[in-house]
Image (cartoon, rainbow, N blue to C red):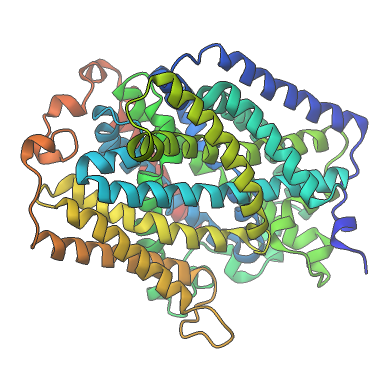
Length: 550
């Protein structure tokens, strides 16, 4: 039997290698160019808060368009078909709009440097330390996902052993982040966004042409893959009603809002904007892009499930390899090089986003806050660069953990349930309920995270107490974490003292002046350049797409 390594060897020509090499030259060039703009820690960690909305908006979505999106969602396309659209239209866009309209004014207006710093100034050191440590750990684990999948592409291209490709891929990402910080990461992400689209759009078009068009594709996949709702295979619930409730509440509310509104990897891009108006529009610009990403990510997975021999003839191919198989079987010389560069771009964008967020939180929220305080700015700039090196080395180890999962989305949704769901509950209460106390902040986080981990543990083993197929375990664990966090926070608040109102200005809506949360100049702009109308338009398109593909 042919080995998986031989099956996945990509027959690249010198033209393809030249295109890939050209891409790397551009990436490293951006790093060198951005280095000249780094003279302080704010320049390194937040690009000096000087980038326009269109740049941060594209970087916002490109930072998420990494291995999880390309490999994980195409793998879900193989298994669940159109049901996977929920990760975008239910599990992303509404939360991105909420972030832009409601939450970014607090993040940007309060002038915090990170999401954990927001937690410290709202709830104190207890909640801050819990959030900073859990976020840092999560970023190292997720960076490993991006890294191992980047290594698989290099392995398929060159046949190098996994450990060699892990190290080479890590060094490439390390080089441009260490040089130019967040600016290098963001501008590289914008370049990578266009390369990713140039890679995946032809793959979708050629693939649809091969199977005879969209109608023919729907006839050749299983019936449940042709409909987005009620998505019982994805949710793990046999009841259509419970399936819809699980997706809307578990994925669409808890997991989605928990990820998009509190995840510093994404929020950091908006914080780098040049105004509060640009910061608010950043996730909404990203939402418009996010609406149409499924057509170049999920559809190729569905196509691979139909035409790739390793799937259609009863092969044992892992869903994570769907895109690679499709590239191997469909793309001619030249386009193959663009596709390889696009995959490398997506994985590096994802890993770079994780590493750049990690080095900010480590330097500001852990090292400066608890280890070495009150040093000159240049010291923390140096710490950030060393944190980048350390995170990259650790990511090589966490990549080996991620390599054990056949579908990385199962792994990632589990992590999001642990870290993001309870954090969102704490943020939501903290921003809109001034009575909530610092003790409630950290105790709710700990209790919610523990509840998710315990529920997940019950699903392990040969005879688990909890047995939900699909990604139902992750959805329920996230919902449980959210509910436990809220409950514990309310109980603890009733027995502890809140902060005085003057310490909550900029962090709680009811005590924050409206002027701190708005840009007066935005009111003078036409409707298509204002935050709220743009957000409502994106939401309307989301509803229309759900109706069309129901």
